[in-house]
Every structure is written in structure tokens, then in C-alpha cells.
Amino acid sequence: MKKLKDLAKVIRSKNSGPYEITFDVMFSDLKIYKQVKNSGILTREHICKLYSIDPIDIVTFMFFDPALAFKATLRRTSSNAQGSIGERDTFGTQQHVPLLDIEIP
Image (tube, rainbow, N blue to C red; front, top):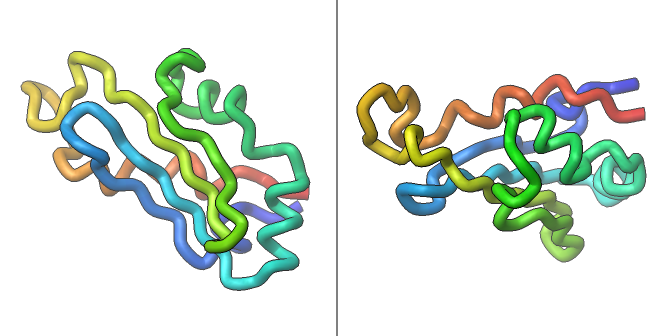
């Protein structure tokens, strides 16, 4: 088992407008990309569990073979909109952290 952070070249999050956050996981090696894609670990259910969200809050969930990448876009909660009172990550750049330690067989 290896952690996603040890397999991916880039794992990042960023705003996708004031009400959504996008996650990108990019690989530099086709074999490793296919290993992660075919592992069945990166699923909608797993993302929901990691981020304590309902499946309806997943806007985009896809593997993009030409770029050797995985992408997911999640709705922010109404109390967590960009720049709202109490919101702690205005640019959404720290939200990828739960993805780092996902174990891939």
C-alpha cells in the first residue's frame, strides 16, 4: 500500500467559484495513473466520507485519461461559502489535505 501523496505528482484544491471547490490529482506516469484509477479507491462514496458530504454535493467526479488526472468538484455548504463569516480557507487551497493519506493498493 502506498499513499496517494507518494504516487501523484500534484494534489491540489482551489475555488471553482464562491460556492464550489475543485480537487485535482495529477500523475506523471501512466502506469501509476492506471494503478490508482483501477484500484477502485477513489470513488464518490470515499469522497463523501472524507468530506462529510452527501453524493448530491459532488458536482464533478471524473478521471481524465489524456491528462493522467482525477478531478472532483464539490459544493461548499451554504455556511461555508467563499468569504462567509467563519470561513477559514478563502481560496480553497488547503482542502485537499484529506486526499493525501488515501491508501492505494
